[in-house]
Image: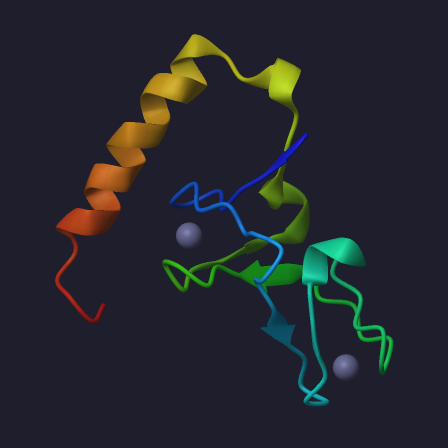
Length: 88
Ligand SMILES: [Zn+2]
Ligand SMILES: [Zn+2]
């Protein structure tokens, strides 16, 4: 199983942390998007790389589910992202 941004394919490492609205900072994929401090459920997760919000479930990718079409589609999406004006 791979955890990656559905928009840019960024893969959060062990040092990747998210901040809850209660100010608690934690690795959100360790708790499936639930803040361990206040119990808030984050149905959407923001990518720390491209800043886009995606459904938390969409971050989980099954290794076996990756098709050639998916693989070829990823670099195309990355190019679209990098083609956006800086700061967008
Ligand atoms: Zn919280
Ligand atoms: Zn991203």
